[in-house]
Amino acid sequence: MEKQHWSEVTQQNTQDIADIKSDIKTIKDNHLHHIELDMCRQRKAMEKLDNRIWWVLGLLVVSTVIGVIEHGI
Image (cartoon, rainbow, N blue to C red; front, side):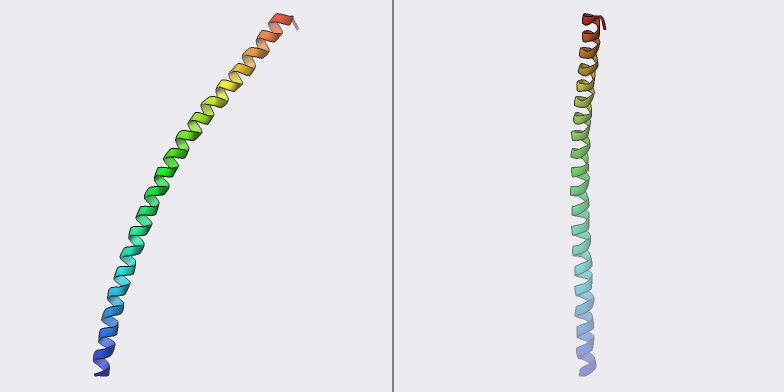
């Protein structure tokens, strides 16, 4: 009877381990999907910021050139 008890415990532990592994895989895959979406959003935000910086830099250069031409420095 003791052997049958351990057999049942082992069987239950095996099932529990399989369930836990399945849950971990689901959580891991779902989390990676969210990270991928967040990275895509960050990339788009960085591209917008990069474009704004180039526009500001261009306006700064143009205003400096206009000031130099206007005042003949």
